[in-house]
Length: 111
Length: 113
Image 1 (tube, chains in turn orange, blue):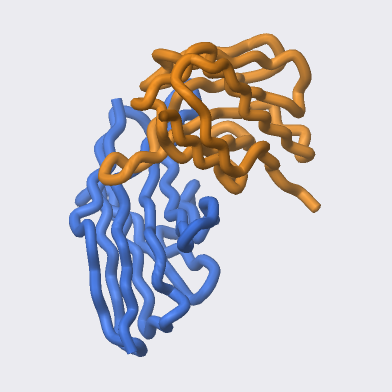
Image 2: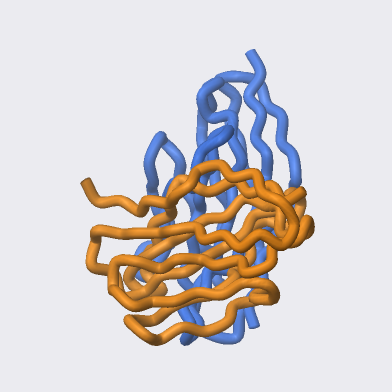
């Protein structure tokens, strides 16, 4: 089944404790992206990747890192999480501007 | 730069009534337009998309949308809604060189019996 998977689905952590949210797709997409969703703000792009080893900042990249060592994986790294990073995170992959497929989401709470 | 405005943050309707969710966009480049639906505690599912061609596009679950270039709109419609259509709906636009999807803030559709 064609899909985007994220892990974990739910995570509660404390300020400053490094964490990684994994994202994997099995559709051979070159493009992958991370978004965060906050009430009243919709979804905002954090980082994106056009292909392996090619990443760039989106609209809200502060406090996040990404890497793209393999085509299928695009992990999101929070090296020192803070409470303002409490949010719902979505990974997406797709064929450029034509369509993007979203993962199920990761609900992160930072206390 | 691109932006999307969803004109209604909440739309309550009764079951079997028609509904229209409004979306306006602005962009300096050619656009591709999308509607996504998010059911409670779930991810985003693509309802329909406009890439080119016919301005009336049909999607899943009986939804359709019309692209109006002169009014820069992409309103979503359904002639008769069901309780199961209760969800949040997001309009989005892409078209830039970075393939970013720019989302509106969402419209919560609540279908009441």
